[in-house]
Amino acid sequence: MIFLKSVLIFGFSFVCLCRAEALTILIDPGHGGDEFGAVAMSQEKNPQPIKEKDISLAISKRIYDILREKNYSVFLTRSMDRTVTLPERAAIAEKTKADLFISVHINSSPEGGAVGFETYYLDNHDDVAMKKVEKTENIQSSGDEVVVQQILVDLVVQQTVNTSKPLAESIHSQLKSTVGKKYGIKSRGIKPGLFFVLALSKRPGVLLEVGFISTYKERVRMMNPKFQDDYARAVVIGIENYIKGQKKRPVRIIKTKK
Image (spheres, rainbow, N blue to C red):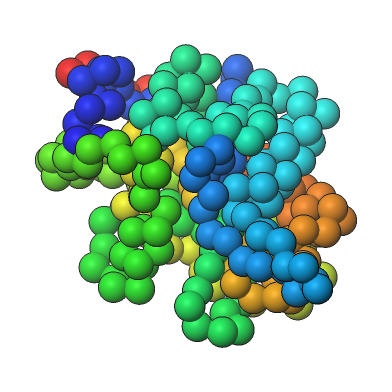
């Protein structure tokens, strides 16, 4: 199963960030390659598909560029349109020894007119609406087998929630006060979610839902380079504010091996 499989291959280690020294940030553009993610059709005479994987990559690369400009150690799980499985994303997190994991996605809804941005962190919950989002983002087009041993998932949650939730709060707060106000975009809040990509990364991380590709106004805005730059800069400031807060905490690195 996806989670158990990754544990057997990569071992079982947790890294809890409490200081910013030698900070490494991994940016994860959602989907890619054969996995399109959410798709909408353009409103041209000859409609063309607009794919989540392309928008998430463009925004992720802008976040990456800004972090590089600030001299952070930063990596991308993919820098082009290629398929990257969940275990492969987890392996990249291990290989790069990432301290933070930022996964960028684009939302979609069958209900017309859905708008807004939201930020997820790894945690348990019983919300039915959130489970629908999880089901969409956890799909693997490669058909990876899914076996989740709940005790292991709970262990990952316990070790990361105290750092992932503040990271989500810091980034979302910055998005709300800058991008939200500038573009008049609704904040849909900070929410817990059981996303495999966050569980498998086994480090403080968040999943960002930038906006709704299913809503014309939102998808046009998300494809605008100016918006992408504004959004990316807000994310970076949110990360930096989180790091400043973590500097005040004592060093605490927890590692357990399977």
